[in-house]
Amino acid sequence: MIAKPGEDRVDPRRRPIQTLLKRVESRTLVILGAAAGGLWAFLELGDDVGEGDTRAFDRNVLLAFRDPADLNDPLGPRTFEEAMRDVTALGGFTVLTLVTVVAVLAFLFHRKRLHAAVLVGAVLSAQLVSDIAKSFYDRPRPDLVAHGSYVYSASFPSGHSMLSATTYLTLAMLISSLEPTRATKVLAYVLAALIVVSVGLSRVYLGVHWPSDVIGGWALGAAWSLLAWIVLLKLGSRPTPPRA
Image 1 (cartoon, rainbow, N blue to C red):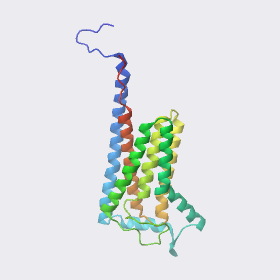
Image 2: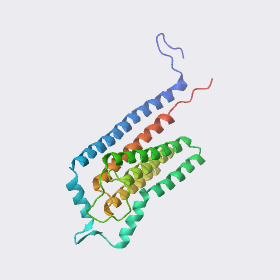
Image 3: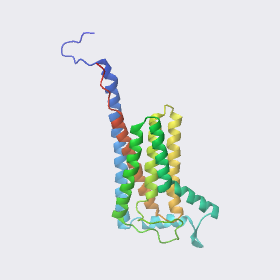
Image 4: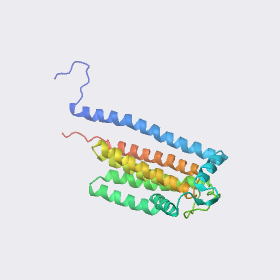
């Protein structure tokens, strides 16, 4: 086909690449906006926590999980309390490390080096950000009830909530990017969301975090996972130069 005078000549082989890049850029803008929203929510909540505006909310929700006759006794039988300790361990350092190592090895075995690198980068950077945020806000742990789990750091944001959100949501995103079926994609996100929500609720139930700590951890962790998604899209969408 002869191009008309003044008409740009476009290599047909480049059209699919250009279309892909436009789709990636549009998706990136949406994800970036969502990540910015999560970061904004976290910072706003941090201001409210620092000013004491969440005190009544935190107190009421925390005590709602307690026996009014004995505030040191969580609602439900002892077996349920033990089950909550098992759930909260899903957001702990040991379990998250094991999940990350197994997932990274699985990606490497399938030659998905970029996916492995994105997961490692997201988890390690989230741990660093969590430590920095805790040191900055330096919020004391709840003192209304006895702690049902060992604690050793500041309260805001909840490290379990943030790191579980970053790890499981990022892992769900990476799995979804490789799976062709919509049902598998949905399953990955649903399971990740259930784990993240359960871990956060367990922290309040055990009396080791204020509810606002958990909400802040969720917001920051979700934002961090979205940023990891952007990294995957940008690095994974680099076009391969056409062969001569």
